[in-house]
Length: 311
Picture (tube, rainbow, N blue to C red):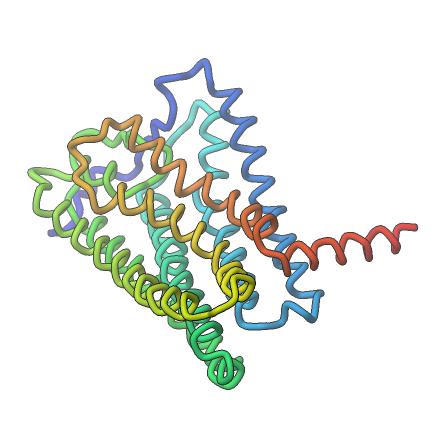
């Protein structure tokens, strides 16, 4: 099916049903965006300048922080502009590009989290061979593989959606070009189209999730065999930050993309989308800064260096 060329642009409704809240929402989301960008940049800088963090675990964390900056930058700037502007349109191509990069960064993050779980599995279950196994080449391959999976996911879903015929209304009842609201503008019955999208999304989400699950089953099994309580606590503490991030990331994503849509109102869909596209990226640097001892020490040392330089 070729697309109907009568639709050349879309109108992103966003939060237009609450126009009196636009100014407040703008301030809130601008603050969140600034904190997200600065927090993740801080993580990247600290990892780069502290030699103690030049290990695979923090190599992946640095890439994760970079992804979070890009991920939020795909949707938040446009949403902030729409909150202040009367013109809420986005071109057909612009909508496709926004969806592509949103899926690309989101898909890449899912597979990167699986790579981080594999790293923790090797560190805890094969500590004597960890350095040899998780060398620089392997880390780059895992990161590159995650990006390749993200490209394939984004290319497949975006091409599939935007080669469908659009007709009638061009109003997207969302704050960005998310798959489900865009599909509602497709001509005819979209039941099977939505079913295929859900199956594809389930595969994309569940494949890295299963890898994470298997890794942590092995990790937990190994930790339970450690005799001392201190040793078990030290081993588990290296995984706690990653586990929290995985729970936040996959919890809302699975609800959004795998569960049936009929049970959710547009407002609930927007709220869930806000959580995984806006809230989770701002929480990641906070989680790693507060729950990871090595990161806290590195932040403290970096802060002291900056303070002494200023003096």
